[in-house]
Image (cartoon, rainbow over all chains, first blue to last red; front, side, top):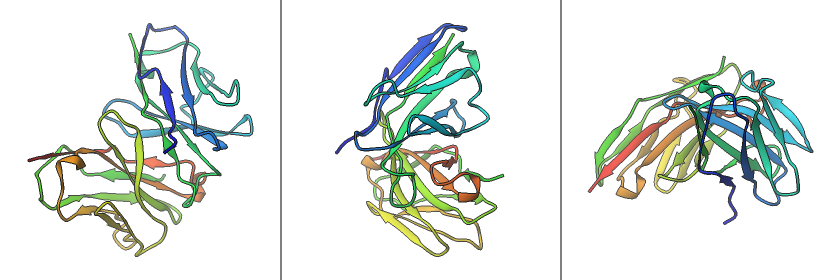
Length: 116
Length: 115
């Protein structure tokens, strides 16, 4: 069964550094998402992306964050200058159409980001 | 605002025991409700879903009924197996809060089943 893949599984970076988290969504999916989970807290929506532009973002997704689909297969999340509080598990997801009851989100395994 | 509250874990059970994981929600509209599961080392997988009051979602022996009167969507399974050990997330989506793509999750409940 096709799946969403994320790399790396774990990334350690120093505060202030830029980091790029990578995702390969399912190939025929058109909508892409990033969620994150700070340790011990809830999974939170960050951003959704369709047709090469952000369709919705949360208040967490400030100017330090950006997303890009650089080619036909990858979907990336960039954090420009990481802070300690960015340490979290980041989940990428995709859906075939705008996610609804019949077009659910498919999640990747996540990238654990640790900012030191 | 919309929110989901789950019972805290971990929940530890013996194989073949009955499982209940409580989930209650707060929503301004008419949400759809979901249970996602995360097995060790894997991503979130949709387990079951329900879109309106009194709907029952079911999959792999798990069930949950959408109860509007108690704003609940408790997950149940009659006889758990060791392979059910995972983290379970209750979630809702509500068109008024941005559509189905914007899921609102609970904190997750870890289930550990031992032989």
